[in-house]
Image 1 (tube, one colour):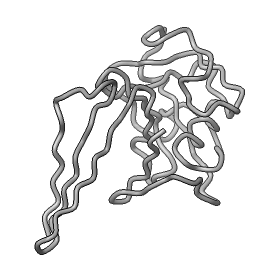
Image 2 (cartoon, helix red, strand yellow):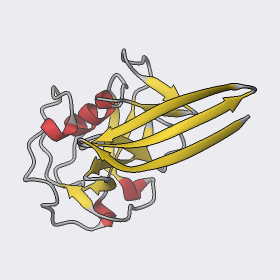
Image 3 (cartoon, one colour):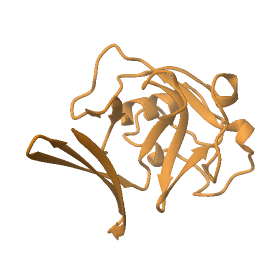
Image 4 (cartoon, helix red, strand yellow):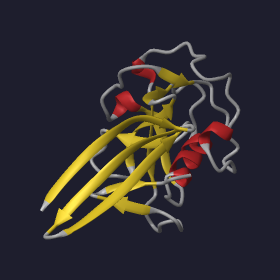
Length: 160
């Protein structure tokens, strides 16, 4: 069995893609995983339901500042990723490593009812006054999975 990741340099609309190919005997399976602006992931947790929150924007992953970060923001993150709710919202430095690269969002103000984090009020992409010591993190509830959630190689993904 062979497993390969291939990054696509082409930009398809506003999507940036990775292709996972898996060879089993003579059968080749392909998974196309596309990230759009506003896609989320959790990084550096011990489990797939926890970690520093990162958001995808213009072809790269960046962090979110924890200014005004609260359980409503975390709830939107967790639900966007397919988890039913958030258990906690906190600064990543409390439990995880700090991020690198750009800090894309700050001063998020979610009601908790938004379907995507980027639908929450914020001052705009790259408008922030933070350092990576203020990266946002969450622990999501795992009691049930939301419909439409898939799991690839132990990584939970939501294509919203």
